[in-house]
Length: 250
Image (tube, rainbow, N blue to C red; front, side, top):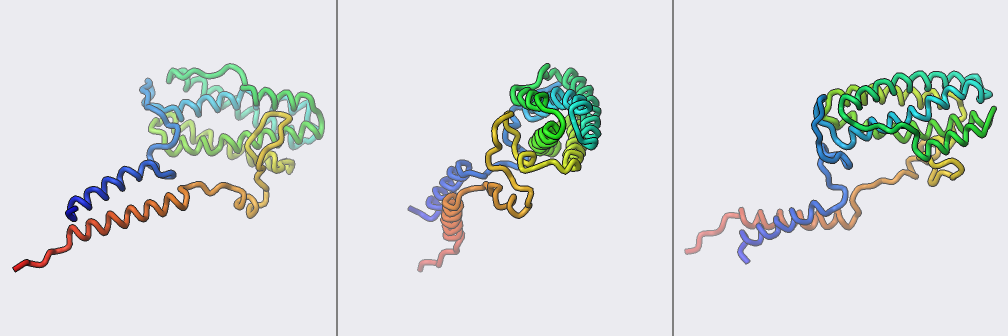
């Protein structure tokens, strides 16, 4: 095989293998973004619509539980935090309903099954038991939605969604700080929320060193990286052979 054909074949192999390797993605194409749809307020993606739905769902259970904290909680601080959460989610709910209506996005009218289980858990408790459930359930839920908001804020091409995500980002960060100020948040509150009565799996420790050790690193496997390097080396050698000046034959 000539050097030119060898280089072409090696380059084709490299391009064929590259998309199949894990961890390769375009920076402007976040996972789950989906197709772009046009609305009266501009283009939106599936992630944009998902943000509206998640904010609506959050309000459907956090507003009533913040209000019920005024009579169920033993801690004055939990009552204060509950009142602030209820007020902020009322503010967000009014805006998400209006924005979704303008964009033609359907929103739920009731909390989902997990959220209903958390409300049932809290409504079965009073005093210190309620305080513990309130602080940890809501902190876990806010921690779960926080990165989703950041993804939309960073990637959306819709100005109205970007502005809304900015407001949501500020309020959710504020709520996490408020819930942590109760000094009742444990490992459960720093983990992905689970249905009431279930223990969180692989709870992340509050200790940042231990937490870092428990978090998955992600990215391509060592074998994939090695394969990419080998293919790249073959392509490089082939191109160099092709470009190398040939000696004049007399």
